[in-house]
Every structure is written in structure tokens, then in C-alpha cells.
Amino acid sequence: MDLDQKRSRSVDRVDSVDPDSSESTRTCPFPDEVLEPVLSLIDSHKDRSSVSLVCKDWYHAERWSRRHVFIGNCYSVSLEIVAGRFPKIRSVTLKGKPRFSDFNLVPEDWGADVHPWLSVLAEAYPFLEELRLKRMAVSDESLEFLATNFTEFKALSLLSCDGFSMEGLKAIATHCRNLTELDIQENGIDDLGGDWLSCFPETLTTLQVLNFASLNSEVSFNALEKLVTRCKSLRVLKVNRNINLDQLQKLLLWAPQLTELGTGSFTQDLVTRPVADLETTFGNCKNLLTISGLWDINSVYLPIIYPACVGLSFLNLSCAALRSFELAMVLMHCKSVRRLWVLDNVGDAGLEAVGSWCPLLEELRVFPADPFDQEEVAGVTESGLISVSQGCPKLHYILYFCHQMTNAAVATVVQNCPGFTHFRLCIMNLGQPDYLTNEPMDEAFGAVVRTCPNLQRLAVSGLLTDLTFEYIGKYAKNLEILSVAFAGSSDLGLKYVLGGCPRLRKLEIRDCPFGNAALLSGLTKYESMRSLWMSACNLTMNGCRVLAKEMPRLNVEVMKDEDSEDSQAHKVYIYRTVAGPRRDAPPFVLTL
Image (tube, rainbow, N blue to C red; front, side, top):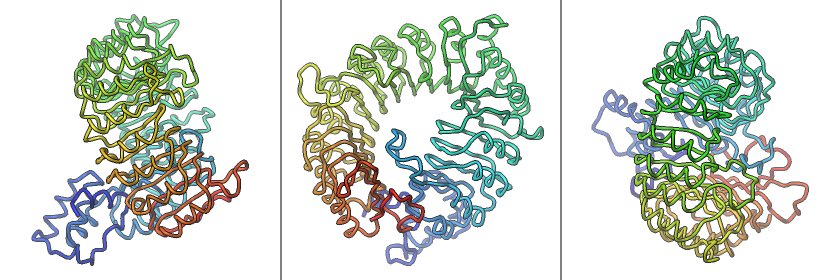
């Protein structure tokens, strides 16, 4: 077994190695005093998992030197197992609900409650410093427990979590006296307003990251200004749209050292300072690498950011409805940008500007300004994508929402940029063929997997037959994540994928004609994967029961709803686990 194969098996499996097995009993020539400091310099959780597989001595050295643990599924392992293996953890990253919860396909009360984890963390790791949660259920009580039970706590990141309100944030601000990071992104929060920023103690000067851009309510600017003023090490500040330009300038005068800035509203009927003063303030922020926000952008104020654009590596305009000529004017000052997010109302002309002015671009995401707009004349087309690929040869990550595409265009794009690691194409009209030839989009994705040997993540869309999946199974040797919706002809399509793709970790499928035969063709694959999601496919309860019986180390969960027939398995979530069936499953989740 080569190192990459071992790595793929060990990710997210904190007990993946038996230190007394024959494979791990080779002796190491380095004493612990030498080995542990060396291993402590390795940050990647994948690399650390690989290191632990070398031999018994390395396993134990890695165990005692590990300070951070990443758990990609909160039900894949128990914290008791984690604590038993890693006694000195200071930072935990924990993910909960399946990704399709972002599209309201997972019921709100499905699970992923963080509180049981916090209770064990308080006993096992009382000196925990960092907690990063994604798609977890987080209550105000949980945040208060976190704030009052970990005396050394410093950093909290909440991404796509739900269940808490401003009261929970008040508890964090009040009790976490050494806080360096508070990052709140895209959460389903009970946003009732309040002066939670006023709860930070006057003695707090350690804050380095503050992000509340996704909150909708008014905040106390007086409290925010005082906090920014005394936190001299603040490097990331992302405010919400209720902060106006005058207020933003005041903040920047106190914090010219920022490396990441999320602005508030970029329109104002009355600005008390000349635009030139605002430009000067932005120009004094010499260290800025990232700009986001720019809500309600008014082109009159757009030049304000030009002086700060020279050194930008990431420009996030996904909240700014810029027109093509406005985007072009901005990009003329952003020749070093490597990551760019825009809305599709920049049009193909805006993407032509990207190709002209961003030669170093590595990542492009184009989001729909109106996801429910079915007018095919709106947004971007294959022409804009080709323009970007012609001018940005280093492009390796694309997320592209459009209404039309052709096989030839995709083939041209990947020929221009064969280094793609992430290719996520979303044709928003379901079942849309190549609009010029009326042929399926099979050859488009065939070109992607044949031309891009380093491809790790792929999302397919449009009219697709089983041929697409035959191409994927045959050529996508490094693919780790595959997302499929409204595609395929028969069970054979999924069989192709499960019979190939040796590095596949996550498979997400919805509204496809795949049934029991396809599901059961992956018996030898699932234990090396993190998870499989299938919804609105042709699965039955009997098929899922067969899988559960054959693969007892997998959790096979079926989510029932009022409209589903008893024999049908409408939503199925399958994941590997060393913790057994979960104990908090609601009545509508059947663990087979």
C-alpha cells in the first residue's frame, strides 16, 4: 500500500492505526526528543495522519505532539476515542450536517448538536483554545457553556451553523477574556439585534479577527470603534452592511494594518468627507490582501478602493452588483489578484475584463445574482468562460453558474487550463443540452476528466447520460468529491463511478435514476469514503438494509418524511464510523 492510499484511508479516522500491528512495529532511529518537535511543524491533518502510519514510534510521537484535530463528520467518531488518542489537543475543527443541508434538503432538527461534544471537551481538554464549527447546531446555552468552561479559550469560528442568537454572542464577548478570533459566517442566527459588541471588556486588546458580515442587525458603532481602537493586532475586520462609508473610514484610520477587510454599505446620500479623503484612507492600508462586502455599491464611490487594490490577492464581489464596465475599472488596479468572486450580472464583457487584467488568477467563482431567474439571456455564457481561460492560464478552481454551455466550449477551457483541481459547472436550466448541437453534455465532462489529471472536485450538470460517468470512472484517478444532480440514464452510471475513482471520498447525488443495484455495487468502496448522500433516487428500504447488513462499520441512515412511501428510501445518508449508530437520531431518521 503506497503512502497516498494510506493517507486516503486515515483521513478523519483518528483511530485508524493499531500501534501494535505488525505494520507499525518497526523501530525508529530518532528519539522522541527529536521526533516530536519535528512532527509539531506539520500542519496538514492529512500529512499527520500519514505520518502516524509509518511505525509504532511515529504513531506515539504524532499522538503526543498533535495540537489540532479535524473531524469531517461529527458522527464518524466519538470524542472519547479522540481524547484517548490525542491527549494534548488545543484546537478542534468539527463538521456536522451533510452539505445538502445548505439547500434545505436536511431537516432542521436532524442532529449535529455541539453540546454533547462540549461536555466531553470540558473534561478532556479544559485548556482548549480554538473551536471551528461548520453546519453544527449551536444553542445560546452551548455558547455560554463554551465561554465559561474554557479559561484559555481564544478563537471561535461558526460557519453555516444555526440555533443561536445574540445572547450567545454576548456570552462569548463577556467571558472570553483572551479572545483573538470571532468569525461568524452564513449562520442561521436569531438576529434580533442588541449591543453584543458592548460586552467585550475594556481590557480586551488581543482580538485579531472579527467577522460579523453576515449579521443583519444594527450594531453599536461606538462599541465597535472602541474595540478596533484598542486591538492593535487586528488583521481581519469584516463588518455588516449597516456600517456606512463614514464609519468605515473611522475604523480604517484606527486599523491601517488590516490584511482582510469586509466593508459595509458602499452607498450614502451624504458623505461628510470628500471622496479623495476616503481614497487616501484606503491607500494607507498598505497590507490589504482581501476585500469583500461593498454592499449596495454606487459607482461614484467605487474609485475609493482603487488605491488598496494593487496588492490584493482575493477580491470578493459576491455581494456587489457590479456591471461589466465597473468590474473592468476595478480589475485594472488588481493585477495581482489570484481569487475572484463575482455575480453573473457582470456578463461576458465583465469576464473578458477578467481575462485581460488578471493573468495570475487561480480561482474564479461566478454566482447567480438571481438564482430563480430563468431568462436565458441573463447572466454569463460559455463565451465569458472561454475568455477567462484564454487570459488566466493558472486557473485551477472554477465555480460557474450559467444558463447555457456547449461541449466545445468546455473542451476549449480545459485545454487552456489543464491544471484544474476543482471544476464545478452549474447549468441552471435542468437537463439542458449543448444549446448549439442539442447533444448531451457528456463530451464536456469527458474532456474535463481526460485533460485535467489533478482534478479533485467535480460538479456536473446539464443533460448527461451514463457516458459521462463512464468517463469519470475511467479517467478521474485523483477525484475526491463528486456532486451529481438530475443526471444519468440508469444504474450503470453510478456503477462506473464506484468501480473507478480510487481516491473518491464524498459522493453527493440527488434526483438521479440510480437504484439498489447501483448502490450495492459500491460495497468495496464505501469504507474508504467519508460519506455518500442520495436523495430523490430509486432506492428502497430493502436495498438499504442489504447494504447495512453487508457493511456493519457503516451508518446507513434513511430520512423519512410524510409523503414518502414506507418501502421507499427517499433520502439516504451513508458514512463510515467507529462510534456505531448515533444516539441522538430523531424519529424520522432510521438507522439500519
